[in-house]
Image (cartoon, rainbow, N blue to C red; front, side, top):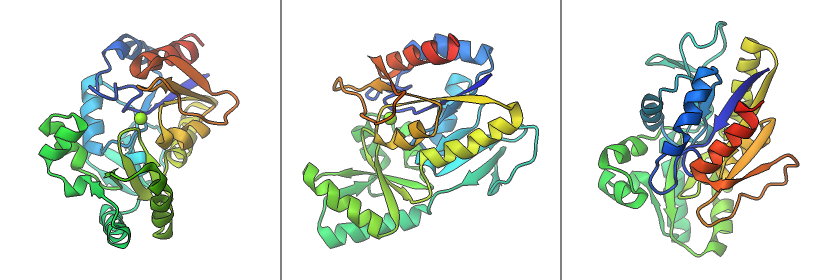
Length: 269
Ligand SMILES: [Mg+2]
């Protein structure tokens, strides 16, 4: 049976602090040899996804900005399907809200509550670089957002509930990706995008088994949407807790846990 691997990037395939995935390179090479699709399913932007696709030689579709859109390389599937628009050499299926609307909602919440909220759109590339431990070049790619705004919420944890309520009131959703909070469209979550893309894989290959790997709350919808969900260990030694019966918890942290999951559920099967 065709296996499709959905993977989060930050804190999962990539180390949360230094963004390295060196330990995963042999497993990635094996997946490529076996023609197993590796679908990035991440909070990262189109530009950042393209950077890592190039770096790792991945040619499969990918899901950007927490489910904001699916990018499918033209010619990847052999049949015609519905898409929102064509862009560069991709067919794009969009789910997300517009970035300007998300920015406006955050500004309104800041005015209503006085919360210390700082979005990527409020920061220079230099500030994002420093805060996220990125090069200036990569910070520019991270700021190039379309469907999702990442932000720092500098308030005590108990205020998070109010933030959540306010975002819902305004018609949007909130997720946390391990490093940043994200505001995005209500229809845009990783799970919905995974389901739509998996249907396309089924049309191409017939029976498909999906495996999903994540580490944080913004991965929950993706993990619920796959046949075999798995989480890697986080920097603080914990795992994302999820009431999923067959959830696999990798012993390894970040990319080391990723390799463990791929060996167990993708390469060995
Ligand atoms: Mg993550």
